[in-house]
Length: 76
Length: 330
Image (cartoon, rainbow over all chains, first blue to last red; front, side, top):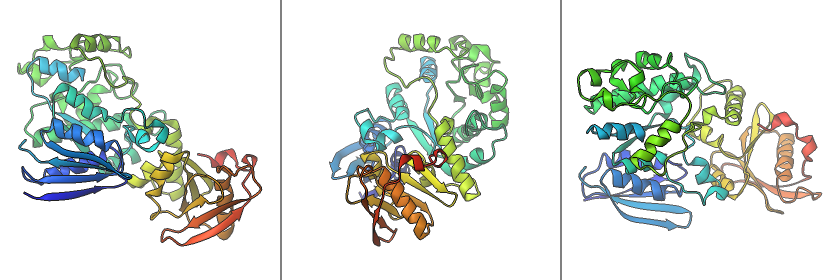
């Protein structure tokens, strides 16, 4: 199991979702992806994308001007 | 949502495709502007997919889409919207995705006569022909008004379960939404593309004109969605934030563009696009001061900051609004 970080600073919806989707496609079930965004919409969109695609959101937090979502990759 | 549910009623497995061109209105201004941040920031495509219980694939077509915007075979609409070419391109991409992922046909929520360019009875066959999808494109909401498609002829789906909607009225769709129990849905009147927006199109045309080329990057077209764009000369323009949320967004571009900020008064962050002489820097500073809280004072202090962080203090008289020609403001 690995944990990767995805920098989505300055990207607006839906780019953080697209980057998350594309990165997760390269990862294995059980791996974790930490997505760091500056668009607050990511706090809704990445969990929504994760739910409909069967992945698990482990954490969704705000830190200063950053919005961070951690997703665990699940079997699709 | 309706077209998908009509297919689901027939037991068809559906997955959604959402193309991102860079010009999509979706959520951007909400994300940027502070005054809009109380509004829900949901992405409608994701939200719809979740309501319908389907997977959604969001596909970045920013680079490929440029050719559609640069030179649309069927021309532009009222603004810089290449609607028919756009539809042809997206259906072509959907067909490619369908083939790559082993799906059988493509559906769309189009209704005959609903939109003035891409959903007319005479242009809908153009989309099928030029995209190459031919009779593998099914429009469940208007299917009974159109020739039978392959899925109907092969018996994969029943034509009886399709609808015969036509025209610009959304009442039949709203009635069907009620029948399906959809209480909430995205506004059913288009407007999801900045290229249909007159003001945005003016700014895009200005960008092309000033550069002498239609080439653009994602950052260029994102910045056209933000702030007041003021062009005092062909070789430079100012992007003046209109409020705090926009100032915060523009801060992200400080390493790509020089910027100005007021130090003696509250004021907007302003990006400077272009190479300016000393006189032009003074002129720019006076314009920025005009949009600061010191606009009615004799002198406003500012800083001009280069992309490498070198700071030059400035002190200027705010430019009176009457000295800013209307044509400068895009």
